[in-house]
Image (cartoon, rainbow, N blue to C red):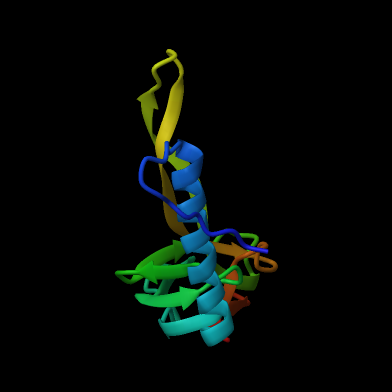
Length: 144
């Protein structure tokens, strides 16, 4: 069951009320992405070789990750390969972290924002909630 907040005149609103509304909207958007479009690359995000040895390029593009987040990469990105990455995958995912600290009336501190950062990982297999973009074999990228 999903609860959607309902507001009325004169209601005292708390941070939990606003956070519940944001969570509801986020849940619905992720659900839309997954059920109507599915996880995968929407456009771009091609894995290509790079002129610098030990590096690849992931082209600009958009994807939907396995939990429904929209991942947008605005420019081609050079990704360094570790020496252990002779075989494996190139994956894209998002990391969320708290940011923008602010003092609270009680003298404590809370964060005002959650920043979502798109990351590329090169590993034997894609980490949980990351989307595989391509495979690395003997130092050569191949698209999925």
